[in-house]
Length: 163
Image (cartoon, rainbow, N blue to C red; front, side):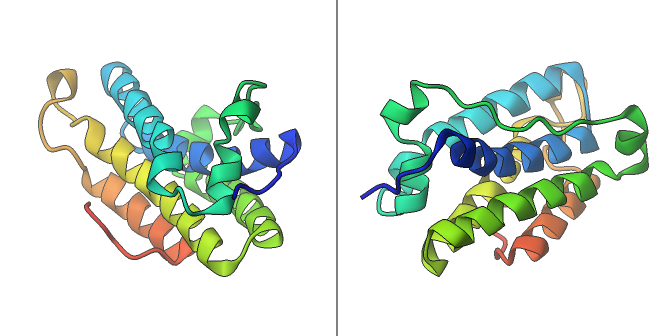
């Protein structure tokens, strides 16, 4: 059974995974790799409802009828200086904290834990999508991406999985 979520709540909850993924993308930015990373995130989120079918929070977030109305999550405003200084992850964590606080207000602990896992899985998919070499070849997850993923995992209390 899916939770009833308002459009604003859905936007806030979707903003968590998107802000986190954007922060991981910014660690090693490249035109080609960014496109691959965005596609990987889209695939990860598209399969979330199926992977977490018993989670009412995630089911509510990805409710097909609600998605037809569209999602307009708050955009993480980014400056070139924040990307260069590595402060983008700090800003993303603030947005994630707001999304997780809303999740805690709407759902039980197990559902919130899976929502946090969903955020990390999206970031792992982004990190694994492209390497630093020509056209995204080469080592897939850089040291900087590993550090960002570890910080996200610790912040959200999620154990490492594939990366």
